[in-house]
Image (cartoon, rainbow, N blue to C red):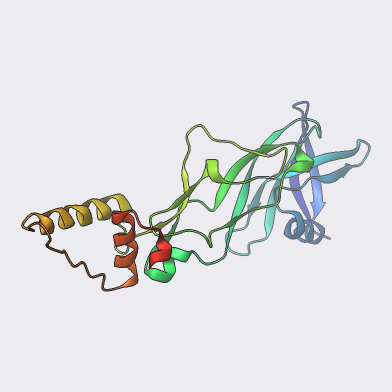
Length: 212
């Protein structure tokens, strides 16, 4: 069977050349990806816990051409890039908001055996103008997000991509201008023509969205 060349980078900093069967590795990679610890057996050197750290493929055939394995200490945390999966339908998109995703992967720190294969984020409760940031993401015990500055992962924007703050500021100025000529006892009638504008009106007036 055809073999793939690779390198095993040990936890002690040594580099060892290895070879793997193409079919066996392709099946293994489809099952574990880059986030799950596997045992690498090296003839004459025993079995080592490793992560599949990097792969190279032929640009035409997509066949694996080189593999890097990273040896891990099961008692020490590692930093790994993990895919993000979004579930549910954002509530804000049902009233015209636009879902905008900024990250499909995030970096996590955890001991190798505690590292999740993916991070699932439920977006069903997101209203127009809301954002989920990395600091908001709930992670399993023993797992931490690795970041220096808090950043956005997904948002529900106003139609046209405007921020909710700008839209609310403009709506408030419009209400103020419209009310300037009112006398005592006069009533200002405000009509929201669609669901998006009803959301804006509730936020401007400080009403709960249940009033929609």
